[in-house]
Image 1 (tube, helix red, strand yellow):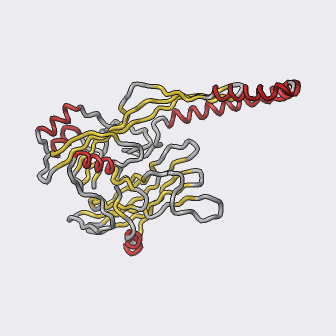
Image 2 (cartoon, one colour; image 1 turned 135 degrees about the vertical axis):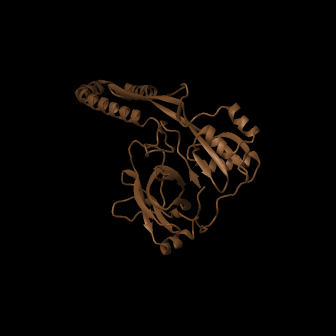
Image 3 (cartoon, helix red, strand yellow; image 1 turned 135 degrees about the horizontal axis):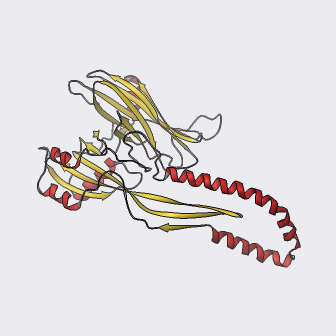
Length: 352
């Protein structure tokens, strides 16, 4: 399986996200959200001083209220506070955040004329992903969608902001054994789905069969001058309590999958308890592993890196995992021996 880059100059700002040059926060409005958080904190801090001054006078006034009126005044205050906190959907114009939009007429023309894989790449640029076993080209697109305006009262002030959501879709090209396009189509890609998962669902909807991910580990051979990197994720580290060993499974759906980059190119989207084999030219390669998860402003997101020197014809095994529960979601990756890795891989399946 090989993955390509998005066109140069494009920017990834989503929580799914496929990051091209370097991992970023998996939310489109990360920087905006941080500004809103700081603004809310400032408002809250300022309001504390005023609230302290009003607290004593408020208690005096409250004590002077007849007991017969306390109940209905309390319900009135609760109703007013509940009405003052709100989230309102806002429809905005859509803009492309990542990738290039492929016109429907262009898509149909490529399919109708039976273009080759090389012609598709020449016309549209490098794909987001090329699945060799399934023989499917993927061109992913990330665009802004509807947003939501929110407001939370912090008496006697208030904090609010705007959060913009994103939408993903992909264009797929199924390539026959002779290198020509035999099917082409477009479909949305939900949050949490990998490009491969979306490609498999599209092929099923289109009514043609493709190779499915293997349900067990299968050792692969290499061509002359190539090396094989097997990346696997046998377990994760979820810390729950201090001084207690971590659980080997993440809680609360912290992580959908881990994105693995080789030389700044996405090569795998690894789910828990899965693996993937990647062929690379022999030589030095920089690897980067980044968690892809729902954005949480209270957490820090950390990536892990590794430089690997590969020799022709050799296979290298990399054990990666996601660590959570210490105020951050981080990635870990380390090289393992073939003996150790083989035992772990025996209970894993190929990622999808």
